[in-house]
Length: 326
Image (tube, rainbow, N blue to C red):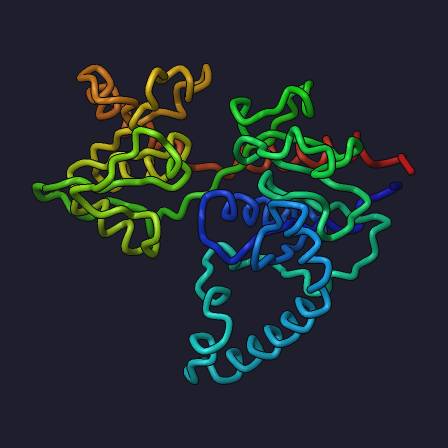
């Protein structure tokens, strides 16, 4: 490939940390002058069977996108008619898609195109020639040779998520996004009760059979913020979610529940800033440290400079890996 003509980033309408980061990369690439778009999947292929199903439904997916374009036109012409609630409501409520262009056609030229998949994706559903796999979490397909190609470019989001087998040089790109208007503390009165985060901790052996407070996993973002502003404590069984930090920003005493036999060092790298405002376990030292570093967490949430630098690093990696290669 002599030059990069387009970058297509696999994403979904589901509003969560990984999908938000993928959208942020898309926006940062556009700011740096690249033709970057999102391709929206309505189900992530996580196995060989899922991949075969996607290949059989690509034409139907294309027709679905044409319908979406028509509905977007109707919403633009008649904003109060309610078309966005009746048709494609997930798309119109997905905040992270705002400002991103969407790749409608799954049958695009592969010659000078980069396609990026996050770690959950099995195989190469868009049949791209030049593939980047970004490990936003632990890669579940490392021991499945049909899930990737040896010529793919592998990059991790954090070293703790890296696969040394696939990315021995530890190429890392880390972008972040934070909605300061949405995620904030507005309740400064006394609080009561606890809320819980399960998410990626759903298979933990120490997960309680019941909880004495709300689980925020399936709430809207607004309801999550409201819950974080009401509760005194937030306990997370997902040890790697940024929602623990959001809970702290909203005024909760945010606690990551350690897995049996593990310590804070198993989750946090040498940069302790990843744990600002959040206690790992319930020891008094950790609770005091979390409270003392909450302001540092707030100060750390201006990501513009860091995101620009990491986007440039991403471009450097793909040029080194793909450009001037056949």
